[in-house]
Length: 327
Image (tube, rainbow, N blue to C red; front, side):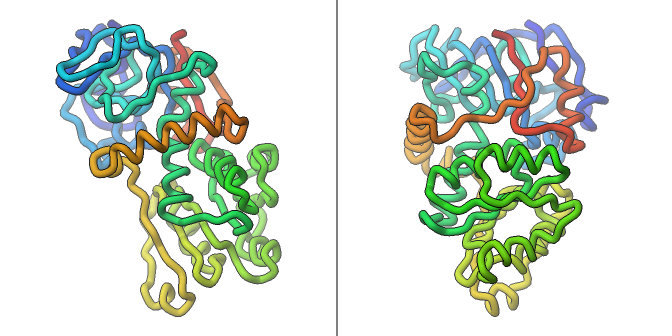
């Protein structure tokens, strides 16, 4: 089978090579899927560079989330071959290949009315948003949610989920096009962080109170400024560090302003609360069926274009989700 492989660590466009690779064999509790769609994520870039918390042995195929049909099952698996599923891929057999390995505790069955591209785009960012906003931040209807990088994959999901929860949503993005995307997704306030002071804008939007929940996948200076925009008893959710710098939270400021800083590492829930993740996927499928969420897929790319697309994602040159389709 064809697969994008990494034999040395570095930028994806430098280290990925398209190779003929052995077909993976599922272990206990695993399935092999014939990949019909695989969505790109920022952690895919980090794992190529060797900067992600998971560091598979070389060589490996990256690709976190994929959807397709089950073609082989391991011991203890009750899923029938031919079943359409989407889930987290288990490295070294990631989704940027014709076939990938997925754990049965990290997948959901795809209903007939859902395309594989849409299903793949729902595997990571939407559970991240649902867990982050509801379980970690306890977002309530009527509260104000500030989403950073709102036009990206993580941010676009959070805007939709915030709206579905009945929150007033503000979002930041870089440039007029991405600001328009945030508005189209349902943001009540969209701010161009390149030209405008988002702290001042959020304070004006909330009558000086600040945002009840801030959803931050960027870190660095964005986190530093967010501490000035958070409300009394607000919750600042740390989702990631696409900005590069890992920010520090001064405990005296947390105390004086009386807010919470909460972390979200979604992968821990697969091992520590697997049933909760299964329930989360079902909740997301219901929301999609009701029209409450719909992944923003800005580009469907060919299999040959994976390195170039990852490079564009790394430079913040993409909007929403980019999906590799092999359907």
